[in-house]
Length: 509
Image 1 (cartoon, rainbow, N blue to C red):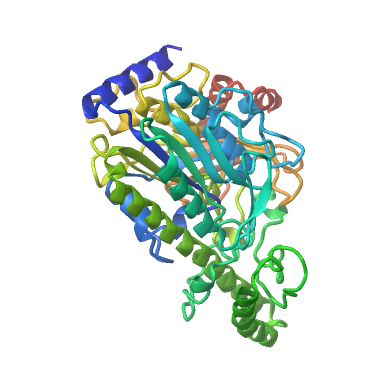
Image 2 (cartoon, rainbow, N blue to C red):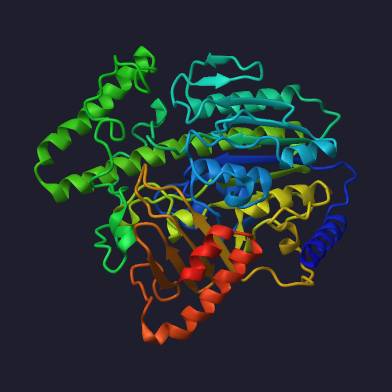
């Protein structure tokens, strides 16, 4: 409890000293789906340029060590809203039978109490409908890339013409234009991109033609001494689907995601992917050539959806500029988790390994955040809710498990050091990707993982020596003391965050 009061006090003092405007700041969170740090040029990506996401970082701060508590879509949204781990907010997986409890304390309700007008537009993906927002318009479940349906506040489902990323931006700008200008606003723009099955906008279909992307060093990983990694079902070689994912020999007349496209959109897709089908037909009997082709095709579609995403973020930023809102708006860009772009031979997320546990996080706050800042401390998505409340001058409830990130950006030393370790817990098994449930601790140098269920083993990685997490060191006598220390730290974190299931497993060792 003392820790909470200390961070609250520091945050309030920092906010008061660093931001002297009398008006409460507006808050805009752009929350994307499955967008990997590896695909953002601000994070050093060589795969593509993302000038508009980069702009937020250049005009604010880039968090180089930003992570999630549970790398899966719906639970990550619940963490954003509550500032609590999955076992505390009640949403541990993506099961359609597990609805998010909208009656619990959420950040939009707390901000509304501070006089904020609140909205969520775009992908929601929490089964139950939003509660506590002044306005919402959401995609049903995963939504569609073309001619998407949206559920409105009258609980009507209406189909809209166009490409989802464009439409979400249109709706967001329209709400900003019509909002009550006497109140500060809190808005989340929930993007569908870059979620599977990566259907690019027509103008982006050929954006990466002629490029052969380099293969990750561990693209042909054999998963030696890593049982859970060997048991998964998320490989590009076997799991990725030729029709739905890679658009080979699609029947555009059937209902579904391809059937929603307009005649001109279908014609453009048929023409473009027919060329790729010819390439596939020539190599389909060569297994190595096929998996390499699948990787190239996957990456081009993924990056093309990200291209539209970045372009529309530019639209939003220009709107803030043109209306003068940029001067008094905290803008946060982040994703619900990271994603595999061929590392370990995979796509998807879920694992505690770096590519999926990491998530992009850039933040712009004029008058508070120094442009061009870099932040290397270990932060998590549980820290987003208290950061938003801190920025609004709202007291952070003691049951919120994260900490405001704003004090990290002060030049003044913290009274109490920031965390030196992260706690993670993933639950969803066996479908859809057969990733064994697990929890673990990550420090600046080490990662200790306890897989339970079918894998039922431990893994240890030295992240300074083994950045790709290829060599499981658990059981190596040279790391015996480190393992004991990390197991103690893991127990302490599970206790701190009240994870009774993990504690029960740890007691059995």
